[in-house]
Image 1 (spheres, rainbow, N blue to C red):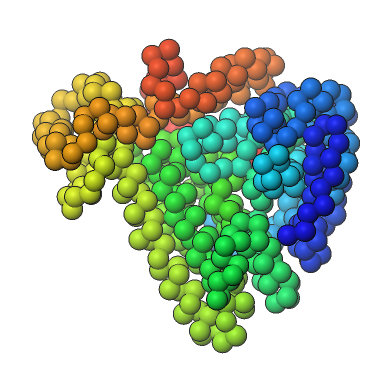
Image 2: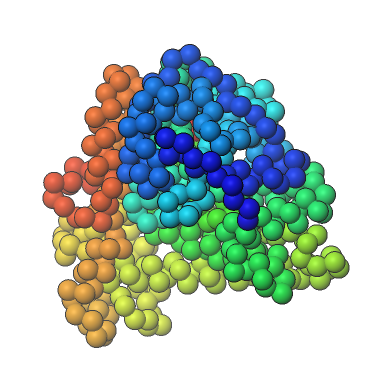
Length: 491
């Protein structure tokens, strides 16, 4: 891939390889300037890893860049075109309020997209205002950074900048821009768009680009485009398993929200599950439960099938052969996902080796957790800390029998009890972004301009596997309420 980066005192080191793709897949577009930008939150550690000069970013000029009021040297702003199946229905979409400044080339030689979310309308805005509100942008910052700390591939949040303007949704809200970083913003929907509105040559160029950017080893395969499909299937199988293992619910798994890189993207109506229940849904718009926690693995398979369909013209000249090739690769997803999930669940229970009855042991525990509405995270934490009496399962005779079976299973492996506990500590987070704590932080920020609550939460979330007593308040459950928790597509 051709690289011609440009550097400046702030540390921006941009290349613009996406802008060298066919012009059917993007529109050159500058951000819309804002009235009174104010930097609210800068991810200083991440900025340094990107090769950026933190004092320069904190300056007035640096803030102007993060607000979209100033184009940094070397940037070539554009809005990406893509499509997507939204709740199963196909639509032409695109970056309606996000501007890609370019790709930061880091000191380690990595290529990272730098995007301004909420930077004004684009040709893909579909009559939207192109703006974003402060609360949802801070929410994405919190959740994406928590996911990163949990070891789950994700887009990252570099900064949140207030615009000094009002954004109107159901009510008047303070406006903000999120500076989002990603290995790339290539989506399943990017390929759907190219396959539907581009030429075969455009599709091949996009596939070649994805290969060079994310899977260069697969580019030399006998059929590189089939290898691309295979690699994306592998990445997504691993990613969705990681979601399930920590109780994360994305909330809006449309095909435009599935990346080719295998990163989690777009934190709209997402949330973490408290009481274990596969039917858990938080999104206010998911009335049918399409994207419920228990459905996420199957939805990922459905989305990957749509990706395969978009690649058919380049998989083989004969369409029937292309379909057979694609179906064979997609068929591997279920087994790959299950392998990752089962391996992860064994680790959560301190199991190093494999036995045929392990899955039954796991399922027995999950059934009891669902029956008793046991907290997902805290149940595994109690098992990790040897405090089974702290769970709501403690009085259930079946749980007592289960504990005996689990202890016997642990005793049949050569590893010592201390090693099992260490494995469990590194596999079971003590802290997740509890929904009520996220809301508490956002309310303080929006209503009182108090960002200390968010800062303290972020500090705790940065060490999710620490199991430290001083962080116990971040593991506490919310007060009981008859009103279900609901999230909204504010991002």
